[in-house]
Length: 402
Ligand code: SF4
Image (cartoon, rainbow, N blue to C red; front, side, top):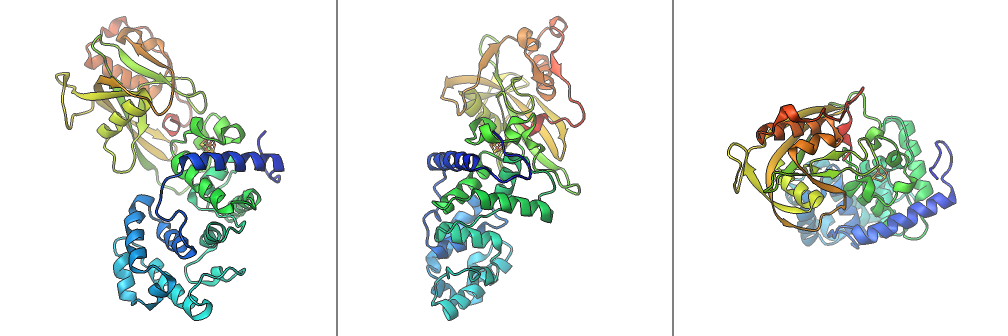
């Protein structure tokens, strides 16, 4: 049963969400240096993580904590030195506030972070989110927190409409977070919500089929989970890169996989595809699609000659595709299978001859990819059956699901 809008979260639903999320977190959480840190360590990590990605923060956090292992060590350092240890992280006001707050903690609280209500919130640079993180994670107090990841998860889980930046939507999300946070393990729960937003309920490509909350999620059971949260009207469209592995065996058959039943294009077929991560090239993405989605180690093929090559090869095509506030570029790379591996997700798969490919329903951009492959492989296009393609209407949302 899903939570209705404008109603309190029922105790049953709350318990299900908390239990499933904590179980998932225990199995899937990343090993990060601030897990289990002191209140000071939690505070430093949360300030560094504002506006900055985890991978970037890790080396900064380790260096900073080695040089300033306590509040007192930080308070006694010069601002110049603190900024030197922050150099490269950006948003230097965060470092100045941290330093100033450390001095206040030494003067008023003996160098400890205070637990009494309102005290943490009064420190420079500590807002509601950071206070919630310190209170719940370090002091095990049932305080909620809502950052960008949590806002996205909650808006999808409960189908919260409205711009996430609006005061009323923010109030609703904080209220939901407050209702959910348990008395026991509030910090673990809050970290689990953030981790789910980082690893599973990601912006343009939520992995609903891997999500512990799918059964209770409004968005996960809707045709298009990325319809939540609502896109900001003045938001510029974001570029996203997708990459597909066009795995062709010695007999000339191509490997296709069936999409999970949830989300837009649920149940349709596609060439193994991933959304490329930051810093990942399309070719690397295609290799990952082969490994994680198809379950094959592969060798990329040079499309002009169809010889297997190492290193950089060109895609056989690039397809541009607009999706609400995403601008997607889909790459396709011809690849030869080398050795089977265990895929990350189990999905139905088929090796299909070029002639038979058109019998499988595909989203429109994947059908374009298919045409490009058939052209490249010199398939007898005139003999191909009429293409079974789901045409897009209104906003083409193919790329928002995965
Ligand atoms: S089911 Fe999908 S949309 Fe819902 S919380 Fe999980 S990943 Fe997000």
